[in-house]
Image (cartoon, rainbow, N blue to C red; front, side):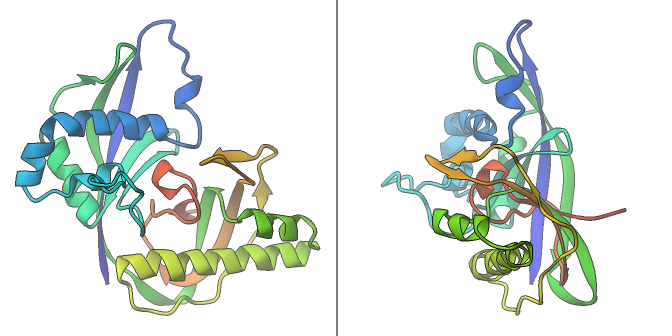
Length: 242
């Protein structure tokens, strides 16, 4: 199946003296708030163009409940850049919104943002004969029960737990919700996981955060996300190029 993705770079401009630390964190909640602030005044126009505006915040607009499934707009801080990536319908929605803004826009008293198209990809998801190496950054892989099992396990068992988690997140989350009908090949960690010394807090739960490198006989585009907190840039997937 073909995946269509579009990514915009967001450049923040802060008032002199404003602290920059809240903007340079793994979770990109502030970035979603900024884009939502640009979407809301234009929601009627966007809806008339066929845009599902709920994709920008991933909530049902009638009930305010979280929408199940895979987020089609991902807000992330990757490679030292603030990025917003749309997938399939999310790519269409994001592109429609960005056509309405051609100059930097003030989204709060402290913050002004500008947007530029960074990357556009149409890629077939397919099996490969040769394994491809990937990284996952700030991966929130494990729930509290599996955390306890992980921390009590021997090194080889820890690797197996993480390989199983990646396999599940690709097959039972990414592929299932994007309608990709293919089996997930064997997942192999190719380096010991780098574990953050500080737990990340997401939706009032505390998670270990992993930076991982793995291989799989799958061709996947960069900037998909796996695990918990995907919409906010946790678990960003990228091919290893060196």
